[in-house]
Length: 117
Image: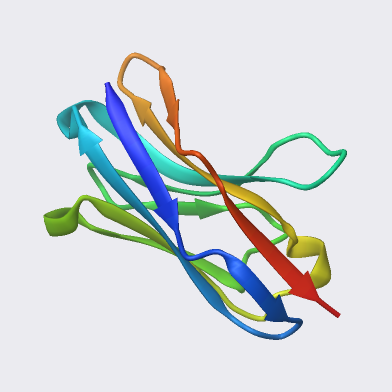
């Protein structure tokens, strides 16, 4: 089991920045990827970014590429999502995800990000 706790959401004006954090605990050794997803009202949850636990390789959705950056601090078992040049369409609940080597996903409780125009 992996437990995830997100923090760092809030209200920001368009063009601003926020940094989300996701603190992981439990069976950290079993995690293959960690990532961020988001869900806007009335829309399906969509993948935003991910980082490999072993290589540190990162990947991004086209909609956030060049604006968002995912990183990790292994000593703190924490993954971050730095969000710059935010747009109103980035407004959503952001969820942290940990996927283990067996393909099981663990989710955080979500944190609200609201970007005003």
